[in-house]
Length: 609
Image (cartoon, rainbow, N blue to C red; front, side, top):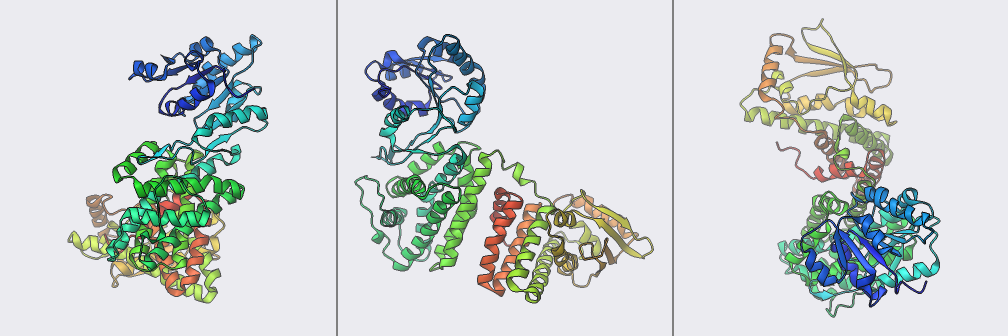
């Protein structure tokens, strides 16, 4: 095949993407493009204008009819990802079968939805077809500056793809005006796309940095921060976008501010680059993918208006999609940390490294979304999540600080956590004019969870007392292999909550279920009579409803925040090591999306109601 000159093509799903690519199709197929190319669309708006502008036949729907009419050598398949499987199973399958029965060559299938993957099309249409997934470079200009061909087009061929070298060469030539072409194997495409997204918030980094520096009296516009970042990126990587716009590290003249910003950038970029290599991408391919993306978004932050930046982001971030999740988690977790570090003076190397780890955690969460784990699925927090996170923290603390020192640290941290919880309950009671007695204590409880408990009352006592034979915390420790660490929580958490609510109240716990050899927790609420206060408790609970309750994302974040604060107060270096290991271990046992939900709340003031 001598390129695609003179070939025939059908476009299934003519929309923004295919219109963007159409000049490449015209340049490749040649002068008779109007005769040799047809298209289908589901959008009737401006249909006649499109026909006139592109010079090809475009019809509403009727994909199989369009294919039969043109008998194409190339199918540009670009319906919405949600519609692609159904169209493939019906109209594409029917057309390929017709071609086989007629003994005619099968067309090359160029699939533009990132999913389904090529293997799906081969299973659906036949193993003899030649298919490739293509994610073209869509950045033609930044602001008003043309930057054609600066970034990569990504091609993913299925295993044993059957494509001939000359066919692949023709495909590269077709897309070469849009950028160089990088082949990504199917096993790595989701990781590549998710990591590539880490360049998008660079525009927000420039703005956040400028705002933080200005808050310290260092004059800096976001364009100047972007110029400095772009120059720093060029100096580190040797890659630059030929846009005719100069940049300079000295655009940010304050040396300390520049040093802090560059440390954050290096952590961010190096973290993304290392993440790609951890996924198995060769270092050279990882650099070819990321270098231009980061350079382009630096340029956008330098030359585009804020309105242009926001409009670009709006177009790119599909509702409910992977990029939307990336930008959401960036704004919730990464950017506040960046602003805090840059507004607080010179950032330390250790602080800067955390930015890279946060970006990598967001990348991993986006990959989970791409694999089908939605935010809704990842948000079902329960006591078991809190138990697992505590168990991992306790394990890490005892190993990092030693048994004796770690034991004291855990007692102190759990006591602080409990007192802060009890203190919130007391603030709500006093705000409502209720006394700080046991009736109020039970009514102002911050959680309600019935699953996984087994309880029996102790009727012989004159006060409220019972035994808990099973609970979801203990089950969580058992199921995750962290049973030995549960007692470090249970031994003083409830007593500390009571203490935080009112020091005059008394809870005694002669037994805890998580301790070795114990089969139940025993609660003796010395200041809660069985009657008549039981009726009073019920009335107060009914009046409050669930107004005082917090979900277990909140409780898990509070526990994490308190233990990390105490660990870092004890030994900052050990605390940083603890944080790094616990993030990874918790995400592996739950998900990165759930880890990020915890981190998003971890900087809250948990003493406030």
